[in-house]
Length: 173
Image: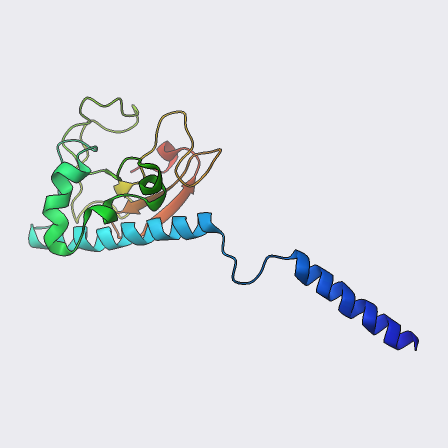
């Protein structure tokens, strides 16, 4: 009888633990949004690479990092990229800015961080870690993938997408 009681307690305890744990089909929406963002950046990276292949290894060079919709969208539309691909889903949901393109001729009139060079032109010969695009970050505010710290995705010249928690300056190429 002691074994039966112990088994019943074990089953009851297991049911209690299972009832308190999140259901298997519940998904962390922040992680889903971050992965959707990374997926959009990867797809855009494929289009940028195809563009560079068609233009002697030169990725599109925008007038400023902020010219994503005005200048980049028309260049990539024939490669299957639409406006939705050029904005993080978190930013899209809040009406925020599109991704920032890091192949540009001038920082322009926007108050960009001083660590960003005045000109940043990316080619297929650029170092693999060179930034091509990134989530738009606003000074003194957390990134789109965090409520309390800089957290963002960025696309590199080698086509990989990285997630960063912390200051972008430390990983910027």
